[in-house]
Length: 74
Image 1 (tube, rainbow, N blue to C red):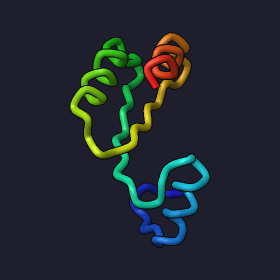
Image 2: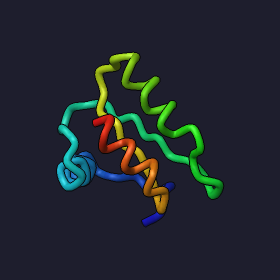
Image 3: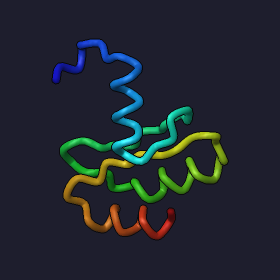
Image 4: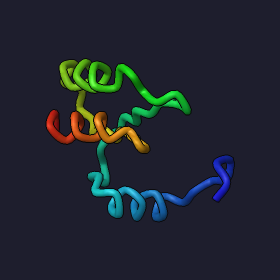
């Protein structure tokens, strides 16, 4: 799939459902680069503390520590 191609609303809703997100929520995506995300836990906590009306998706890749911290925070 190309990032620049458009996606139908129906396809977007299917993707949301497949990933466990509500059909009408805003989603905040947190992701790092090739160097990982050394402050990922801190970033996640700050976003949660803001009490935004949104769901959060965090890409942990191979960073097991960040994944475990995110699960605990959840």
